[in-house]
Image 1: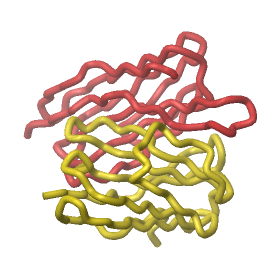
Image 2: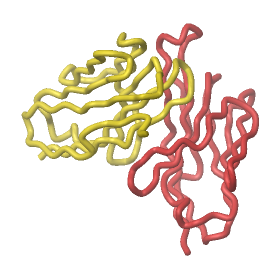
Image 3: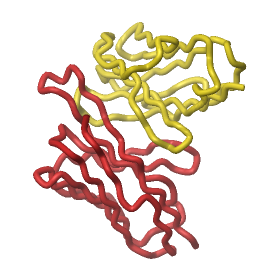
Image 4: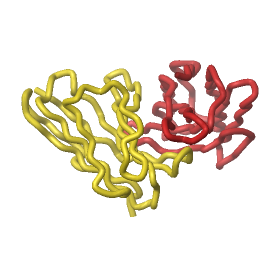
Length: 111
Length: 113
């Protein structure tokens, strides 16, 4: 059983399009996150949700909108995609302040 | 926010060699994790180690929270150990409402046969 799963694994799209990445965890955690890994492999937090409530929004453009329909799911919707949005996006989950587990990543390429 | 520095940035080893990776952080942390990002991009949990020492096979880790550093030891390295090793520290207020993991820039390890 995959603990944190995200779909799709690869996403290639044109500039200006809108796309979504889905994330689900079956660990019973109450906190979920989105991280972005840039071309230099640096991992930076974008959003954090605790019990479906947004608790961290790290100066991410408002074209990025997370949505948490329940504690097990955290989706990321991106509007008007730009070339600079190309990166690997990781979903993660944890108990609050506990050990975090990451999904396999979604490689987004904007052309 | 907390600064996390990892060293060395790059490391090349021959199979069978031992190595030590270091993680320094600038302030008190709630917890600390070590990850291995394999060549396929997966982030694999190695250790959850806010303090003390843990061992898992050929890998072990030590965190000295009072001195704000952690070490990851890899013994008898294998080619499958290649990849990027990340240290990440947990920071946030006591209530946990702004808790997050802050990552270092990683150590790129290459183990040659």
